[in-house]
Amino acid sequence: NGSGKYFTIADGVLWGTLIGMGAYSNWQEDNYKAYAASTGGVINDSNKDEDFYANIGDYTSIYSYNDQKALERNFNEMYDEEAYFWKWNTTDERRTYRDMWNSSETANNNIRFVVGGLILNRIVSAINAARLVSSYNKSLEEEVSWNFSVGFMNQPNLPTSLSLNVQKSF
Image (cartoon, rainbow, N blue to C red; front, side, top):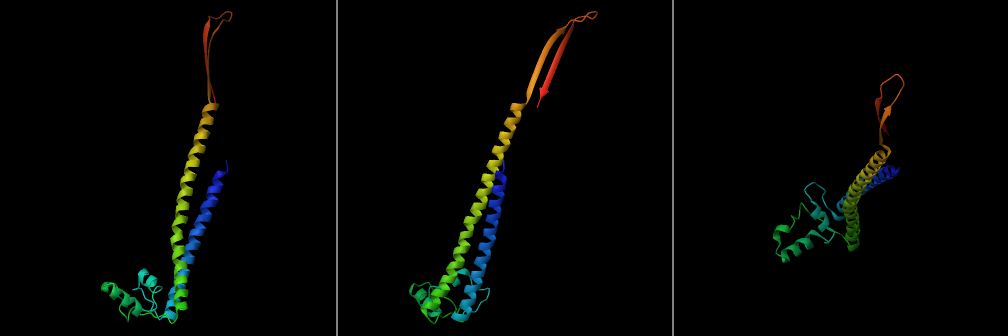
């Protein structure tokens, strides 16, 4: 049965997709961060988390973001204006950034479906292998046979003897 090669091919395609989507997501992340730095005035450093990069796509500047958080009385969510500064010059710049950010996040989120496909492929492959082994073992049982025979032998000049034959075939 050649079904194993299809599971192997599917596994290879899924691994390739996983690697490709991860690389694309990282590439898009680098792009939106570079765009935010060059167009929005963001200082790229490791102190900024995912939420920061999500927020700057929704607000035209740190001032509008902080004003909104102050109105909501979420003072602990406000950003330091020097360390977390950004300002989009136009709505189109902000939308361009948001599209880049969305593209990276979508690819990153879709990776879980590929991982699910990898897991499902392994489970179905294991079930198929167990089914094939069971089928093979049943065919062996059908081919194995035993033959017993008992007989008396009368030969001239010899006493009567008992003959016992046991035969097993595979």
